Length: 401
Image 1 (cartoon, one colour):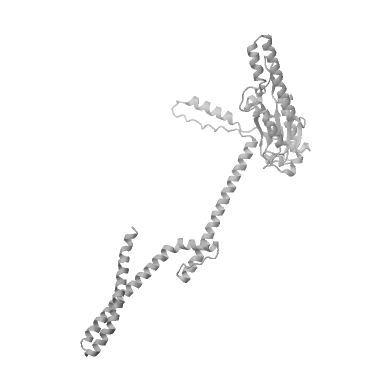
Image 2 (cartoon, rainbow, N blue to C red):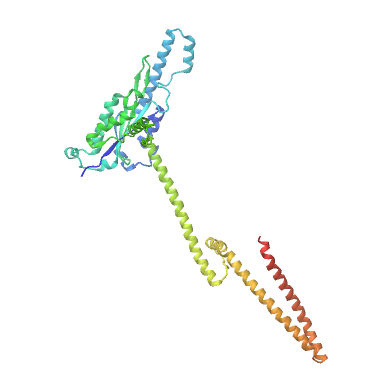
């Protein structure tokens, strides 16, 4: 079975001298982005090149370069008797020994491979012949590659073993001497810094005997696609090939920050969804209880005793308020109809009493009249109430328009 090929990973990022303090805080695990660090393994990290105090030494060297350049410039102005320029430069003071740049005059170099490659053992011929671990062999290749291409400009290198994958950090101080004798920091003096594709080709070839391969040649694929499309432009029936998207370089630190932000966003979204599901489940549970209560009592007479009952009461009013109000309205209408019908029956009975009284003796008729007087008052009052109910019923739909 053919072993899976993993690419050797090379990343470069610019640094300013002011960035070295933060770089050292992360190296010593005293600050910075430590969310991905396994503190139990930090003691395994090891310095490979440079002294323990390399950061201070580099900053002092850069300051000395600026001071020496300044002194030499003043000497030249004195020799040329440029008094006005001399006074101006004395006022301005030393200048940074590098050209204006958005990336910084130093370079951080990171070398690594997929963690699965480091975890795989004994699957290649070199694994069978050499007893060293893959981390040891990767480290030896990395140091030799750095020394081959950067020489004495390597001021620091270390191996980190307390993160997800074994990797090596290095810092390059690209010292250069200009034609006019100035000491400057000039990253482009190194071809593999000047041309990123050259760097990828170099590191891919250097690590090939470990079974690692160069990363995808995306830049060359983009150039080939653009060249092909330019050649066939205007030809009948010729179809252009898609141009691969240019990959944006992201340093390992930026990539880790993006991953942690993405994970945090996913956790926040998951928490929000779980909270919403809990609310819905609670609401469903409340609805079931409310339905049972309504089915049992036919009313919404909920007497809340705590916050949960208050919530259920509110849910009851929302879910069943209108429905029960309609039911109560229908019951009221039915009651009003029954009263009106019974009132008509009472009136009919009263008319029958009047008709019968005419046939009775005077003394009996007068007794009936006395009783009927109080009855008529009740009938009139009841009749007025029914009329009011009827008007309210008829005007009800208009009030809701």
